[in-house]
Amino acid sequence: MRDPAFLFFSAAAVCATGGMVWGIQMAISGDHLLASAHAHLNLVGWVTLALIGIYYRLTPAANETRLAKVHAGCALLGVSVMVPGIAIVIQGGTPAIAACGAFLSFASMLILIIAILRHGLGARH
Image 1 (cartoon, helix red, strand yellow):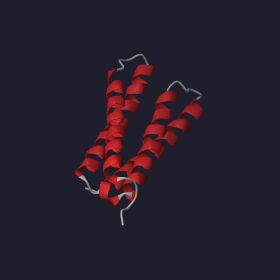
Image 2: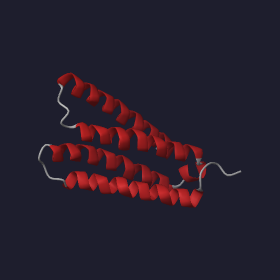
Image 3: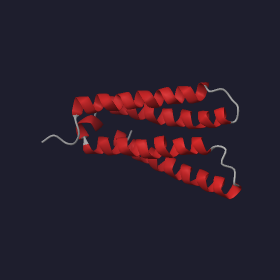
């Protein structure tokens, strides 16, 4: 398995590309009904995952832990569940899937806080 920083950056790039394609599709069709799901894909998927990837790349001690791998799994699953869940809610479906993804994303941020408190920021010399 690749290191967590690589996983975060790879997933962020996929989310950014998906968000761009989705945005182009909305612009061409003129249908912006799912704009809030698109925004979450860009902000949580692209921006948040990329920033976490930067943290782990700058902090090798944190990147090498088992917690970082758990963090990657939780964060990626959170985005993967939350964004379609938001789209389902907008179209009149149950909020359960979106809520599950939101809780996973929240747990991911709590894991980031733990990593920062344990390892600080940046390489230790």
